[in-house]
Amino acid sequence: MDSAVAREQALDAAERLFYGRGIRSVGMDNVRGASGLSLKRLYQLFPAKEQLVEAYLERRDERWRGRLARYVERHEDPRRRVLAVFEWLEEWFAEDGFRGCAWINAYGELGATSDRVAHQVRAHKRAFGDYLAALVADAGLPAALTGPLFLLAEGAMVTAGITGGTEPAAQAREAARLLIG
Image (tube, rainbow, N blue to C red):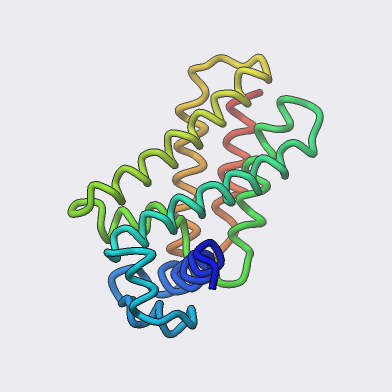
């Protein structure tokens, strides 16, 4: 089997398991079973579980930010694009199997003990913040709004992950609407 295909199989299985059950509760043998790869092949691809977690977060980041950007770009009005972030969050929160923010969850489990995981989480949050800053700038809004908008989005993610509902996104969107006028 091609290494790229095997890597994707491993990452698909890891993502389902890590996001669905938590990183610490999933062993490499679980990933092996869910991926259909041998344990030897899995360890050839990812010599340590930490490397698999890092790759899972990195790949999920690319897909998550891509989905967000595609949704937001459907709107032409720059101010509307800022609010579209919160609409997308509401749709994401409503998805089957939503368990909150994968990066916040990973940081809660491993951030204090894994520099690799902490780095991935910080990179994801920085990229999301930079994306919001660009939307704010494109809308001609004061740069000082970026921080509060970021906190509204992050707070909605945490709250939705705990409550299992979409209402935090709607509340954050309304607060964002008030902030941007």
